[in-house]
Image 1 (tube, one colour):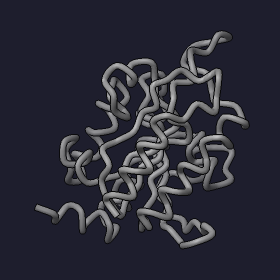
Image 2 (cartoon, rainbow, N blue to C red; image 1 turned 120 degrees about the horizontal axis):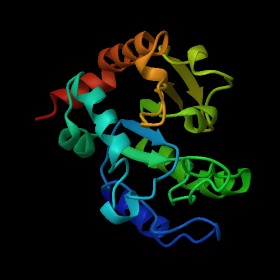
Image 3 (cartoon, rainbow, N blue to C red; image 1 turned 180 degrees about the vertical axis):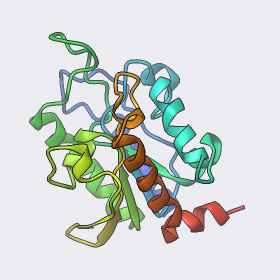
Image 4 (cartoon, one colour; image 1 turned 30 degrees about the horizontal axis):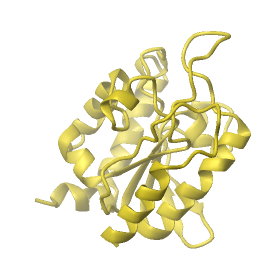
Length: 203
């Protein structure tokens, strides 16, 4: 299994399917985990630090997880961190923030994610942000899905899914009601999930 995920990431690291995406390809350590966190796409700084959620949004995200038992170091050692797209999409030229990957770019990257499901056989997926959530659930608003647990059917297995909002500094959703309460509801669901309890017990 470890060899499979390493080989997978080696192939992923040289992917060049999307000419408008800015490399490098960002991956986590080649760990085996029953939990997958699925982000949206790397930001402008992740290429330099070489790891997912390696900048400001990550600080907020890891505070959330520290509150339910795993600090950043432990989380990175025990949870497989993936994304809808693995390269930086570039800045949004028509507004603030980063460009949202287009449908073709999302489709190009989807097989990498599907291969990870097959290798890892995860018990829990944590999609972070609207773009990631949209790959699993149909919902127009975060209030419709955050704070709830769902079951996702893939061709090979059923996986529990607990969505989270994106921890971007540009967002105020999780600091205001009802987002503040719904975020805590979601984190409580993750904390009580058997897969989370199992990795927290790992010495």
